[in-house]
Length: 153
Image (cartoon, rainbow, N blue to C red):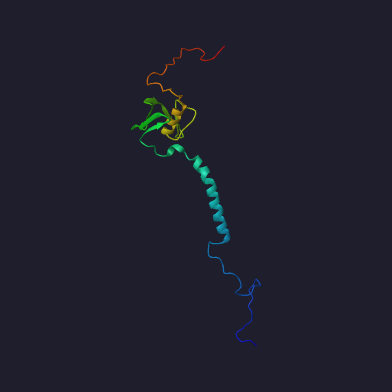
């Protein structure tokens, strides 16, 4: 008989005692790790989409700018009431703030821009070479005298 060798003990599931791997630490199972990896991958995939839906005009605007863009001098200052006074080559450019926080100009009023500077640059791009904005107060008056405006019989 061998001394020191006792009877082999078998667990209830049929495996010899001491051969089962130790239990995983609390909260660190493979399922938890896989869940964390899936969550991280989903967040990475959704980040560009969420950034695209972020309102572009929400970042704080600078108080003023003075730039040259494609040969045109663009200047803008924000007044105490929050309105912007923007000029292109010294002539005023009327800007409007949209409900979503973006800006549009009367020169390029089909597109919205995240900042007044971007709207002014787009207006400068839309002007033909040699063309300038109208001086303040020289806009043509449009008087309605009744009748069928622009409708041909």
